[in-house]
Length: 177
Image 1 (cartoon, helix red, strand yellow):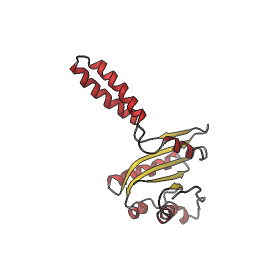
Image 2: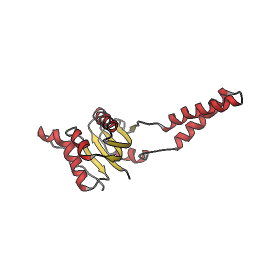
Image 3: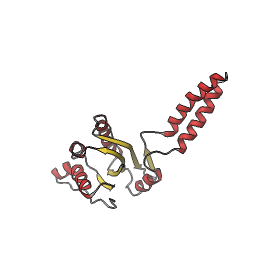
Image 4: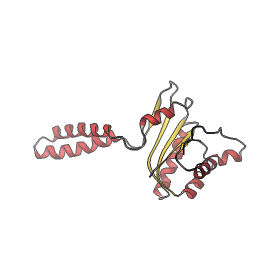
């Protein structure tokens, strides 16, 4: 079972730094992420999703390879590659793994222009080590499926540096458990 965590940041750069740090922790086997997406509210009100993995592109690449291979058998590798790329891209576009895009856009609309939200789908977590590493990175927890104890520990870890400097973050709204 996976947990969903949504953390708001004042900029896309701040959210990206935390995402990159979590990806480093994943290489150390301290966390296993199912998805990590940054939603940024544009000045025009639209929400841009910055995803790590594009199923459409991956499907197109895979489809091109298999289409060319099958095309070689029938002496039409270019036609096979083109047909494979098109079918792979279509299959990838119809397959949405991870966090629902509409959900992320809805949450992103609640942000101020220029703010970003980091959406994490966490499969496994060594909570004490990951939270210690994230101590003081900032951010405000918007939503989580953690129990109250883990959620509070996450809030305290994110606010660690802010509290040391006398800055308090606004209370989060809409948390779910």
